[in-house]
Image 1 (cartoon, helix red, strand yellow):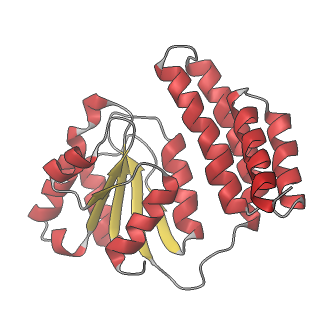
Image 2 (cartoon, one colour):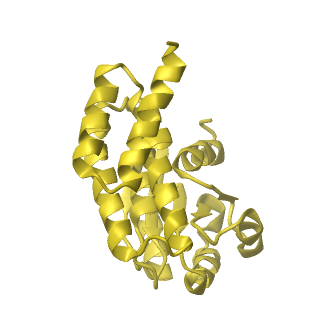
Length: 218
Protein backbone atom coordinates (compact mmCIF):
# COMPACT_ATOMS: atom_id res chain seq x y z
CA UNK A 1 0.00 0.00 0.00
CA UNK A 2 1.38 3.42 -0.94
CA UNK A 3 2.09 6.00 1.76
CA UNK A 4 -0.44 8.39 0.25
CA UNK A 5 -3.17 5.76 0.17
CA UNK A 6 -2.39 4.75 3.74
CA UNK A 7 -2.53 8.39 4.86
CA UNK A 8 -5.90 8.81 3.17
CA UNK A 9 -7.26 5.93 5.23
CA UNK A 10 -6.22 7.70 8.43
CA UNK A 11 -7.74 10.96 7.20
CA UNK A 12 -11.00 9.13 6.47
CA UNK A 13 -11.05 7.50 9.91
CA UNK A 14 -10.42 10.84 11.64
CA UNK A 15 -13.12 12.52 9.58
CA UNK A 16 -15.64 9.73 10.20
CA UNK A 17 -14.97 9.67 13.94
CA UNK A 18 -15.69 13.39 14.17
CA UNK A 19 -18.90 13.13 12.14
CA UNK A 20 -20.02 10.20 14.28
CA UNK A 21 -19.32 12.19 17.49
CA UNK A 22 -17.01 9.47 18.82
CA UNK A 23 -14.36 11.11 20.99
CA UNK A 24 -12.58 7.88 21.95
CA UNK A 25 -12.46 6.76 18.34
CA UNK A 26 -10.95 10.11 17.36
CA UNK A 27 -8.26 9.79 20.02
CA UNK A 28 -7.42 6.29 18.81
CA UNK A 29 -7.31 7.42 15.18
CA UNK A 30 -5.10 10.42 15.98
CA UNK A 31 -2.60 8.32 17.91
CA UNK A 32 -2.61 5.67 15.19
CA UNK A 33 -1.96 8.30 12.52
CA UNK A 34 1.03 9.64 14.46
CA UNK A 35 2.40 6.13 15.01
CA UNK A 36 2.14 5.49 11.26
CA UNK A 37 4.10 8.65 10.47
CA UNK A 38 1.19 10.60 9.01
CA UNK A 39 1.90 14.32 8.84
CA UNK A 40 -0.04 15.90 11.75
CA UNK A 41 -0.84 19.06 9.78
CA UNK A 42 -2.48 17.02 7.03
CA UNK A 43 -4.21 14.83 9.62
CA UNK A 44 -5.80 17.96 11.08
CA UNK A 45 -6.74 19.52 7.76
CA UNK A 46 -7.81 16.47 5.77
CA UNK A 47 -9.10 14.50 8.74
CA UNK A 48 -10.43 16.54 11.67
CA UNK A 49 -11.24 19.71 9.76
CA UNK A 50 -12.86 17.74 6.96
CA UNK A 51 -15.02 15.96 9.52
CA UNK A 52 -16.21 19.25 10.97
CA UNK A 53 -17.00 20.54 7.50
CA UNK A 54 -19.17 17.46 6.95
CA UNK A 55 -20.83 17.98 10.33
CA UNK A 56 -21.50 21.59 9.40
CA UNK A 57 -23.14 20.46 6.18
CA UNK A 58 -25.36 18.05 8.10
CA UNK A 59 -26.30 20.92 10.39
CA UNK A 60 -27.26 23.08 7.41
CA UNK A 61 -29.36 20.21 6.06
CA UNK A 62 -31.05 19.94 9.48
CA UNK A 63 -29.90 16.35 9.95
CA UNK A 64 -27.74 17.51 12.85
CA UNK A 65 -28.66 20.12 15.42
CA UNK A 66 -26.68 22.08 18.01
CA UNK A 67 -26.18 19.14 20.44
CA UNK A 68 -24.79 16.93 17.67
CA UNK A 69 -22.56 19.72 16.38
CA UNK A 70 -21.14 20.28 19.86
CA UNK A 71 -20.37 16.58 20.25
CA UNK A 72 -18.63 16.62 16.87
CA UNK A 73 -16.53 19.57 18.01
CA UNK A 74 -15.65 17.72 21.23
CA UNK A 75 -14.35 14.84 19.15
CA UNK A 76 -12.41 17.22 16.92
CA UNK A 77 -10.78 18.96 19.88
CA UNK A 78 -9.82 15.60 21.37
CA UNK A 79 -7.95 14.81 18.17
CA UNK A 80 -6.37 18.24 18.13
CA UNK A 81 -4.96 17.73 21.62
CA UNK A 82 -3.13 14.68 20.33
CA UNK A 83 -1.93 16.12 17.03
CA UNK A 84 -1.16 19.76 17.85
CA UNK A 85 2.02 19.13 19.93
CA UNK A 86 3.56 17.34 16.95
CA UNK A 87 3.08 20.17 14.46
CA UNK A 88 6.28 21.69 13.16
CA UNK A 89 6.42 25.38 13.88
CA UNK A 90 7.87 27.80 11.39
CA UNK A 91 11.14 29.08 12.85
CA UNK A 92 10.80 32.46 11.15
CA UNK A 93 8.15 34.89 12.42
CA UNK A 94 5.56 35.51 9.75
CA UNK A 95 3.89 38.50 11.44
CA UNK A 96 1.11 39.28 13.88
CA UNK A 97 -2.55 38.39 13.38
CA UNK A 98 -5.54 39.64 15.35
CA UNK A 99 -8.31 37.06 15.00
CA UNK A 100 -11.90 36.85 16.18
CA UNK A 101 -15.54 36.14 15.40
CA UNK A 102 -17.45 39.32 14.58
CA UNK A 103 -20.00 40.79 16.99
CA UNK A 104 -23.31 38.94 17.16
CA UNK A 105 -21.88 35.50 16.38
CA UNK A 106 -20.66 32.98 18.97
CA UNK A 107 -19.64 30.17 16.59
CA UNK A 108 -15.89 29.79 17.04
CA UNK A 109 -14.95 26.26 15.92
CA UNK A 110 -13.69 27.44 12.54
CA UNK A 111 -11.91 30.42 14.07
CA UNK A 112 -10.12 28.16 16.54
CA UNK A 113 -8.92 25.91 13.74
CA UNK A 114 -7.59 28.90 11.80
CA UNK A 115 -5.84 30.18 14.93
CA UNK A 116 -4.02 26.87 15.37
CA UNK A 117 -2.90 26.90 11.75
CA UNK A 118 -1.68 30.49 12.07
CA UNK A 119 0.32 29.60 15.15
CA UNK A 120 1.97 26.63 13.51
CA UNK A 121 2.61 28.77 10.44
CA UNK A 122 4.84 31.06 12.48
CA UNK A 123 2.39 33.88 13.16
CA UNK A 124 1.96 35.53 16.52
CA UNK A 125 -1.79 35.31 17.16
CA UNK A 126 -3.93 37.58 19.30
CA UNK A 127 -7.25 35.79 19.72
CA UNK A 128 -10.09 38.12 20.70
CA UNK A 129 -12.56 35.23 20.91
CA UNK A 130 -16.13 35.46 19.70
CA UNK A 131 -18.83 38.15 19.58
CA UNK A 132 -16.14 40.80 19.08
CA UNK A 133 -17.16 44.43 18.52
CA UNK A 134 -15.60 46.09 15.43
CA UNK A 135 -13.75 48.69 17.49
CA UNK A 136 -12.03 45.95 19.51
CA UNK A 137 -10.45 44.59 16.34
CA UNK A 138 -9.11 48.03 15.49
CA UNK A 139 -7.85 48.74 19.02
CA UNK A 140 -6.10 45.36 19.19
CA UNK A 141 -4.48 45.87 15.79
CA UNK A 142 -3.20 49.28 16.86
CA UNK A 143 -1.94 48.11 20.26
CA UNK A 144 -0.13 45.10 18.83
CA UNK A 145 1.07 46.67 15.56
CA UNK A 146 -0.67 43.77 13.83
CA UNK A 147 -0.08 42.95 10.19
CA UNK A 148 -3.44 41.24 9.68
CA UNK A 149 -6.97 41.25 11.08
CA UNK A 150 -8.76 37.94 10.42
CA UNK A 151 -12.52 37.83 11.00
CA UNK A 152 -15.11 35.10 10.64
CA UNK A 153 -18.85 34.57 10.94
CA UNK A 154 -21.37 31.84 10.19
CA UNK A 155 -24.33 34.23 10.25
CA UNK A 156 -25.54 36.48 7.46
CA UNK A 157 -26.94 38.92 10.03
CA UNK A 158 -23.47 39.77 11.36
CA UNK A 159 -21.57 40.12 8.08
CA UNK A 160 -21.89 43.90 7.91
CA UNK A 161 -19.76 44.20 11.05
CA UNK A 162 -16.77 43.15 8.98
CA UNK A 163 -17.25 46.13 6.71
CA UNK A 164 -17.43 48.34 9.77
CA UNK A 165 -13.98 47.09 10.84
CA UNK A 166 -12.52 48.07 7.46
CA UNK A 167 -14.16 51.49 7.74
CA UNK A 168 -12.89 52.05 11.29
CA UNK A 169 -9.37 51.08 10.25
CA UNK A 170 -9.50 53.80 7.62
CA UNK A 171 -10.79 56.37 10.08
CA UNK A 172 -7.93 55.49 12.43
CA UNK A 173 -5.38 55.88 9.62
CA UNK A 174 -4.37 52.23 10.04
CA UNK A 175 -5.77 50.74 6.85
CA UNK A 176 -2.59 50.95 4.80
CA UNK A 177 -0.62 48.95 7.35
CA UNK A 178 -3.17 46.28 8.26
CA UNK A 179 -4.44 43.62 5.87
CA UNK A 180 -7.98 42.33 6.40
CA UNK A 181 -9.02 38.71 5.86
CA UNK A 182 -12.55 37.34 6.14
CA UNK A 183 -14.08 33.87 6.12
CA UNK A 184 -16.99 31.72 7.23
CA UNK A 185 -20.00 29.96 5.75
CA UNK A 186 -21.89 32.92 4.22
CA UNK A 187 -18.77 34.86 3.18
CA UNK A 188 -17.62 34.92 -0.44
CA UNK A 189 -14.78 36.49 -2.44
CA UNK A 190 -17.33 38.95 -3.81
CA UNK A 191 -18.37 40.04 -0.33
CA UNK A 192 -14.74 40.44 0.70
CA UNK A 193 -14.12 42.69 -2.28
CA UNK A 194 -17.30 44.66 -1.67
CA UNK A 195 -16.34 45.65 1.88
CA UNK A 196 -12.77 46.44 0.93
CA UNK A 197 -11.11 43.42 2.57
CA UNK A 198 -7.81 42.17 1.21
CA UNK A 199 -8.83 38.56 0.85
CA UNK A 200 -11.12 35.62 1.58
CA UNK A 201 -10.16 32.10 2.66
CA UNK A 202 -12.42 29.07 2.40
CA UNK A 203 -10.70 27.05 5.14
CA UNK A 204 -7.86 27.08 7.67
CA UNK A 205 -5.15 25.86 5.32
CA UNK A 206 -6.07 28.45 2.69
CA UNK A 207 -6.16 31.14 5.39
CA UNK A 208 -2.50 30.54 6.22
CA UNK A 209 -1.52 30.60 2.54
CA UNK A 210 -3.41 33.86 2.05
CA UNK A 211 -1.90 35.42 5.17
CA UNK A 212 1.63 34.58 4.03
CA UNK A 213 0.89 36.06 0.64
CA UNK A 214 -0.50 39.26 2.18
CA UNK A 215 2.56 39.81 4.37
CA UNK A 216 5.00 38.75 1.66
CA UNK A 217 6.30 35.54 3.21
CA UNK A 218 4.61 33.08 0.86
